[in-house]
Image: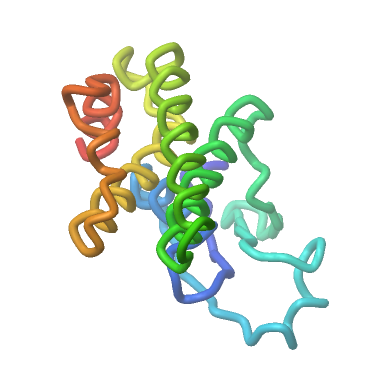
Length: 176
């Protein structure tokens, strides 16, 4: 991806799976626009029939590349997927009731605790190199903290500076 490139992101007008891509494009100062295709009518027009899709337009040779969300290295995708699992657990927890809500809270707490351990072992921002995983992680923490303020679900207590000082290093690097 060169400096002469511009990008078009295709996704729904919600944070969801494209939020990491949006944050990454903003973080690197890329020129980009966003399209919101009519769904499911536009499904057959997308690579692999899914969103998000990131289209790179290289101005130097007028070539267009379509890239799916899997542009990151396999290990980074695995970590990012763990963060997505946490986000989905928080979302599902919000709409659950009774025993299902209890089960989802336990699952979500276990996933967050695992993320704390993984992030402590792999935090790359402290070395000055912000990665795709750092951006995915940043978006996950931001969502959990915002959701907690709105709904008081208690998950934010697991992502405090006291419980996970590594988180703040990542957040500071992405926000810099």
